[in-house]
Length: 294
Ligand code: TYM
Image (cartoon, rainbow, N blue to C red; front, side, top):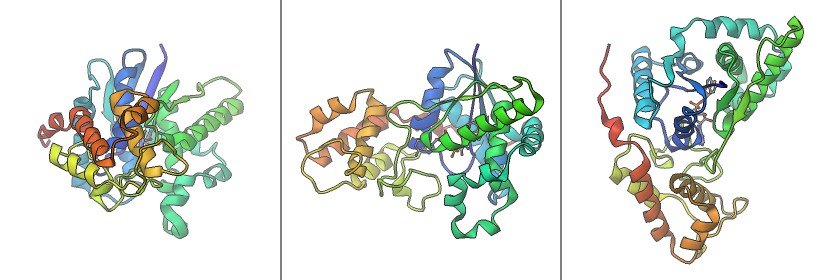
């Protein structure tokens, strides 16, 4: 059977982007693949973390996986730092990764901006550790959001370089699975920026732990444009397109059907319906379980 590997960093709250872009798809994939879902705490320490908070966040992400529907009887769930092969293989693969390949990584450039010299070697080598995660288990498929596409292409390149060097098909080339209308959920405050854990304003994202009032308020305050009708024009109407994509992912309806249903209604009616859907589907209540300490 084909094997899946994927992971989430235990930094900050999980948000609707993590859920719709990744975790919700994993729940379905459990039925047709052998699945390994990791909480990637070694990736988290590529930027400074407080040790106690990292331990707690690792437990909380693990609880979130289960609350979202990952079945620990079906799938393997574990923290990355518990298995030493990730760090060990990362070193070996790093010896087969030309610097030129790493210099192309847009996420590193975005994260460091003009201060790349101050970034750690760990942050620079982040995609090599990600390749080690995947190749260490000879995973064949990797379900992620759109933002991880370039890292997965690099993982394939590294696997190919390793196989050529040792002249054997040692690692399968992992296939990215980037599926559905929600592969890139944008900020609720700025439709040109990705929804992320690190954006300062909490109004930019729906956290999986948000209660119904918070979800309703955040969608009500979500940025939209001044046009009277609702149309899907992702090149021009970024915020509106994002809300339609979220609605499509939560409801399972096509964008065309959504535009047909809400096209001539006003934004407040659409946002209200969207909030109701999110309150129903986002697994916040199940996440209220207290995560016990060690
Ligand atoms: P992380 O923790 O940033 O994100 C976890 C998953 O959520 C997806 N995602 C989104 N999808 C749609 N819209 C968004 N706004 C959005 N934000 C995040 C991400 O694409 C990802 O699938 N490097 C990875 C973690 C990782 C990993 C791996 C993934 C480490 N090793 C091996 C797969 C295989 C990351 O930073 O995820």
